[in-house]
Length: 508
Image (cartoon, rainbow, N blue to C red; front, side, top):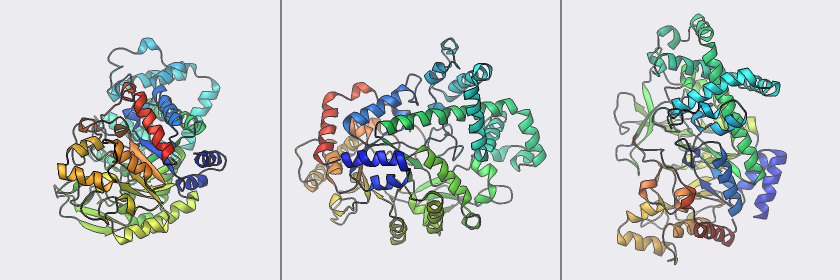
């Protein structure tokens, strides 16, 4: 662990380049979304429990905290379908922090506003903005103004977009009046004037989110914990990104999609997954030297030490589905200029601290793209145990430049997965693992830690030994996902001791 600590110290002194060095060392992390932290108001947030989790990671020797995307989701709560590629999820804002600043009074927390619904928290943050305007000191006022100026490239459009979305009953932008849908200059100017106070309040929400996140990131750095983020390759059609950057996407003159994104039939679904996101107009992006993508990555690089590109294979070729199709079956692979995009990102940021989510249908060309930029790929142990000794997810086939997981947020928990197997399959799993004398999920956690992969990430559910009822997401479904929470009472001393012992045993 000394090497990892030294690299973290170097990172704090010299920036992102040393994170790449860390990715070349043996370390371990935990996958836990912020919403899954214990929370007083329905879901986890950036308050004290987030700091407690950093302390827990530090106490065990774990070096990495991986989260899901932190953007503002739609009503289904999916962090992979957000209203902006830049803005943070205001439901993650800590109300306690606002109270400590004196911008929110305990007496203002009525029973309704303390509920988990996002609009209730928004109500309280609006009250905090009112008091901020009345009582904030000059330092905080200047800090807010500086934030608005530095983030203006995306924040101005986002704040107007959200204000208009509220005005039109949360309807998608393609259902707004044509003069706003098409962003006519005079209509935009008048809307900014009419909605100025609401716009300023939305900017304040983002200021608070990013200030709280910055504080947490600094605390994690002081405790030798890296923050590992996740960037969805596509953005939601109902987003400020599409409304304000129409030329970046494959849309017709009315702003409608003729093709949508997804994946063909695979492990998760016999009919594939029809995500419904718009595809990129790569010709336009290439002409602009990928400026939109670079700025999107800039936000993630500022927030995180390491970033995973979700559905990395889409940077080589993406599955395009006719918008009229109800499933993803009748699509086709369309090439993307991933090499040129990653070159532009590397030129902008130097060393690239990225991880490629290279799951699914992976071709030689996708592997070549990842290897050209020396990006770690992902290995999922739950996918490993078929009849093929060449299965790339079996530990004996790993490369050092890999990140191994027992499972991801899209998988069942390891205990749930194991219980779904036949007795013959269970026997094969244990035989493949060398018949360890321990139950699931500990046996799979040990296999991850023992592997040659430089980084091993364990979902918190597996550390807590939880079953299928506690999985985070079922791909291809829209109900009941993203709601899992944990309690500290589930983490007893024996589990902590076992985790710490495995970390030391396998040099992580």
